[in-house]
Length: 124
Image 1: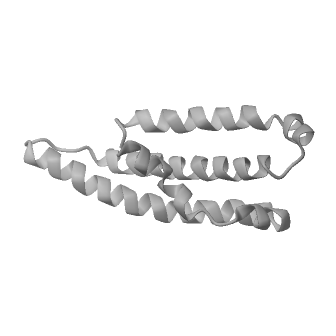
Image 2 (image 1 turned 180 degrees about the vertical axis):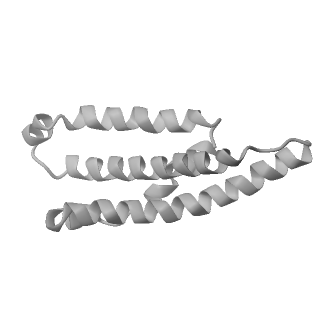
Image 3 (image 1 turned 135 degrees about the horizontal axis):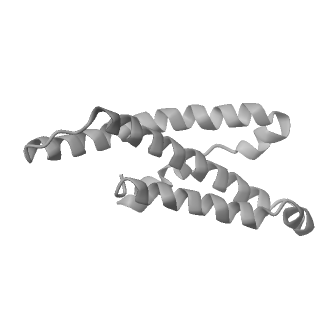
């Protein structure tokens, strides 16, 4: 289940690389805009589940947990989209250009960042 939520953003990734050639700022804005909507939907679903379980067990959930959960969902979406774009670019740019910008290192750092968010809230 955790991996499903981790890779869901990749299912609706638009061809951002074409947009990037025209306007990188627009590409960043569009990714963040999509991820805000994604984070809202997923956070509400997870919050409903978690708060229901907590309430059923007689416990309460702190008010800051919802915003923390939303921030994690947003971060996962943005990082997953960045990784997808870089993987697409890796296949289209010359290998020496890819090495010059240290693309594999950047992908590895993004992967670690993504894994850290997955473990951050117990998979939520």
